[in-house]
Image 1 (cartoon, rainbow, N blue to C red):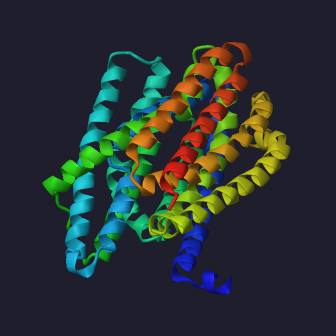
Image 2 (image 1 turned 90 degrees about the vertical axis):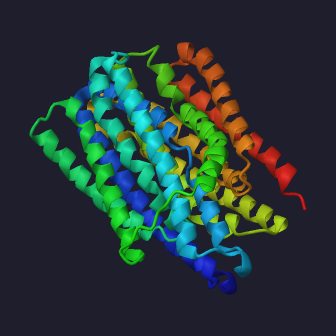
Image 3 (image 1 turned 60 degrees about the vertical axis):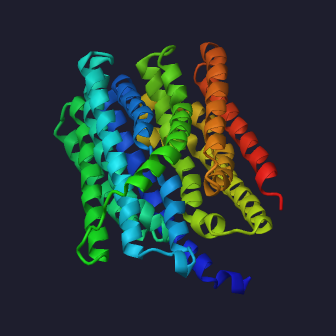
Length: 427
């Protein structure tokens, strides 16, 4: 056991996990604090509109993920581990990968922002929702394109710089939200603060990368690699669009059947829950390079993924018990007495973290083998299952019908993961 703990990959992963854990705790605290400030300032109805605008942003955002970390990280790792005779110049290879990915991401992000602004100008959304979304969507121009630096850091299992940048900007954003609330800035203007945060993160990541490379950026577009990213990324892209539609389908469907005030109650509960579920994604993000992506022995890989799935399920189940017991104090202290109806919703919602964590760990194997069609089928199936359940149960059970749809979608995604394991991980 001591030998295993002293292994460089394990040490690096544990160190990275500590930083990711700290960042996730701070981000969770900041998100909940900001949510509480805005909920008290806006009231249930306006807060429901704010959350609906954020839901629309979350649905639009995957349009910018045409070449995501699930392609970039394995590509960078693979290039670094090529035989010496076949290995290109490291800086040139990295510059071609990041430059090609950046141009592709930026072009798609710009198209997504312009498309959204066009929809806003055409009056497709309720006026207040549209005004909030108009500022929020600008963050897409900075978040994904410059996220190639974060993917580079992930490939080294060294996320500390990106996490420190994220922590600093999150705390700054919280302070600015508090200031804007105190001076009673109109709710329609708050979305621009998220765009400013994304721009600051992008600038800091760029500066850090250049400092690590002698003051040079060194990014360039390699046509063959660019085409490869478009080709390989398109199926992944469609899969991720289906995934995020699935994750936000509950609010999109609920908005048709309940008031914005009730949607505000549901969104308050889900905001707490989604920050908790983010822990599972954090675990997957930090453990993937060392324990999944670099492992070639199928028996060892199968053992690793099963252990990670069990670990994630155990951690999230223990946390769900705690959050279930503390749901009342959390909602009352964070969101205020006007959100009392969110308490029973949160008590049920936190248990979604268990299947969500199991799926996130299992998904790492799908990403390792670049099984893009499996990813697409999985999230398309989850989306269709959730849509059928939501359409049937939301008119009857309201918020609890939406939670049931999410649970059924996660279970169907886990079933596809298990099928893939059986097909791919047998020596």
